[in-house]
Image (cartoon, rainbow, N blue to C red):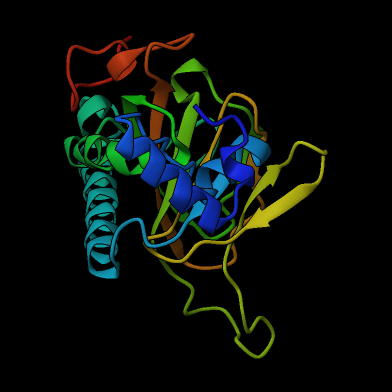
Amino acid sequence: MIENWKDLTDEQKKFAIEQMKKHNIEVPKEVPESAQIFNSMNYVIIKNLIDKNMAKFFYEYVKVEANKLRLLEQEHGPECYDHNYVGIFNDVQAPGVFARYGDPTFDTLLELTRPLFEEAINIPLVSTYSYHRLYQTDSDLKRHKDRKSCEISATLCLGHDISNIDKKVYPNYNWPMWVKDETGKEMPISLEPGDAIMYRGCEVEHWREPFMGLNHAQVFLHYNEKDGEFNNIYDGRKALGMPKLT
């Protein structure tokens, strides 16, 4: 192994690779830039994790879910349904917004995107659970760090409706998630539909200030390091898509 591989010029790397292949020596894999950023900052933005059409589908799906639960509660009361299967409106971290744990659709996305995240941060992962929300006007997200099943997490923007925003007053409004970096600096992170931010959830404090638009859908995709300190596959559930353990 060449200890100073990252310090070599492109020409030096090319020559070294030729020599290693000639002598049947394993060629080192270069650490992608996204992994270097993640290792130094404990978070990294991943543009276009999913395409815009897929993000729009998921955005509309979340709105349908939220509207369904709202109508069910209006007609039959909030206690008539198993909220493990239909979602909630009493999320502690974001009171009043629609949220759901372990939806089969988003747990599927959780597992399908895992290899993409592993490649981006150069860390093998196990899936724990997904969790999605539909924020509304004046919604916020309390400052917090996550529990152990969210050791490495991604927040994926699905879509939003900010048609009520006066573009003359706020021409570039894009509701950010805030993170507190290693130096203590508070950074706003704004994402477009399909973009994600990946971060060490147990270490990076994160939050959102009150939302000015009409609605905003996000899905959180949570992982542990494979064979790491926690390694809590499926968040202790028997399988993906199962409800949260009580």
